[in-house]
Image 1 (cartoon, protein in one colour):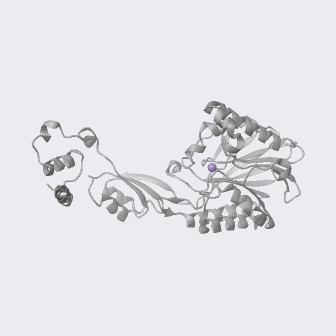
Image 2 (cartoon, protein in one colour):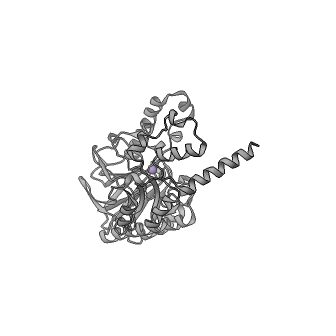
Length: 389
Ligand SMILES: [Mn+2]
């Protein structure tokens, strides 16, 4: 039996106001091509389909279309909610997708109420999948306990409750009966962050131990962290990671989906399949001349640019004219300016504001821009007028 595991799409995510919807469309089409080519039996999408709890209509169109395209490959499609998703909204929509043969579980359900599902592969091989969507802390721990416990106790409590949840979901698993799978959106200890995850929900309070997944499970499909990675434990435990670089913390990551080959009674084999349709995120630095020379080579990458020039008005615009995909432009402060950034008091004595402003520009490595100095003079004069001086 073949399973394709993908996660953390974050559709609707924009970068400093630049929409990435077309990128997502291309990336998810590539994921569907992999599912088709590999003729997988099951596609698992382990949460954070959307970047926000109130996704725009274009983001919704891309996600529903992608799920239907995956289903059209002949695979069974199973989806759980992540912390970025509106988990209740996913559940409200689930019956519609169910009619299309797609299982969508926004929130945790009891094992006998949809928390564990049985699926047959193309050749009739049975699979049993336990679904563990993101569980917010307030739902795992009763509110009065949250109030009465300190952070360390609450942390243990969350992990303890989640361990009970996993035990209850996997109680019926027998390694020889079926291919047993857990699909979870969770922070599991030992995982390395990508950088684009929501900080508050990767903290220690939410950390689960990898040992809560029993050896009777053939494969644990995790979502939440954006870097593709395997965790050590009693079985195969993997984060698929996001199929696009979600944030600059992920700029050196290769993005993947995972193709898992599993059979009853033997350990699963996991293979990474790179997904390359997304634009790269890159950090570059240099003088304007050096940046101009890079323009051909950076292609369609989104850029964080550090420019090595004296600060002056319009510098960022000049960088964007050379590199239109520069979404973040910073001026690199030279070591000289950093150490001599202050004008000594003796030099300041007896100077006019105009002279002091010029000294400040020199000392902080700014160009002595005539326009800027005269703007300073004008503002200073206005200020005196307003004050009735
Ligand atoms: Mn997440």
